[in-house]
Length: 259
Ligand SMILES: C[S@@+](CC[C@H](N)C(=O)[O-])C[C@H]1O[C@@H](n2cnc3c(N)ncnc32)[C@H](O)[C@@H]1O
Image (cartoon, rainbow, N blue to C red; front, top):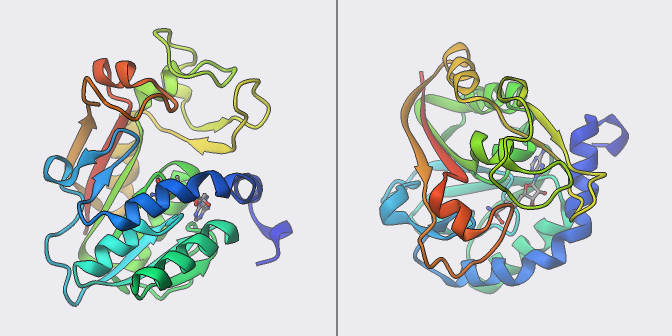
């Protein structure tokens, strides 16, 4: 799609991710080499988080905001036929190269996960780890995920918790112990003009608003996890330090079933 027709946040996030994609190559390569899925900034192991069905044979799966494609690779290795969609052509270039190097077959689309080029009820499983989960407008991507999933199929996603969104200072520094914005106003967070590490446009909702959105869209909630970083997490600082993420939930996981 012509960039000028994209919603403002999608256009902004496209140029942001195209600009920083090289910084994600090494982490993508490491994750592609691993057969043990691990999740989020502090690498929570799959045994603890349970994001993926053990056997995905015969399933059609989609990753919404696939980045360098390692989650897609983990699903393909479990037997799924996998589509990855991503807004950044440069992220997809890494995903394509790694898929070839590892001999994993993936269908990779350059596009906006708020508007997926597949028919209704096409997929058996959808997932996002820091893709659509934080970069897409929930009021748009959640109904779109519902549209492309079969009844009974699961949508699982991991992103930044509402508490962390509240505790991020407006200048873009990592989470501290102050509530910097109104909980009830959480929605669109624009980090383009902040002083520390300017970013893109992200989305976050109060927990009750997520519940309402799922109910009104036609998802039932199977589980909600608040992830705790290990005390000695060796992955350091992201939008929160490991010490912060050990004391408070920086990341959350929703597991939903399409009704
Ligand atoms: C942090 S990566 C997620 C991939 C991987 N799980 C990871 O954590 O590295 C975020 C990805 O979301 C993609 N993204 C942002 N907005 C998107 C949108 N509207 N549609 C599809 N992908 C999007 C970005 O291009 C980027 O590759």
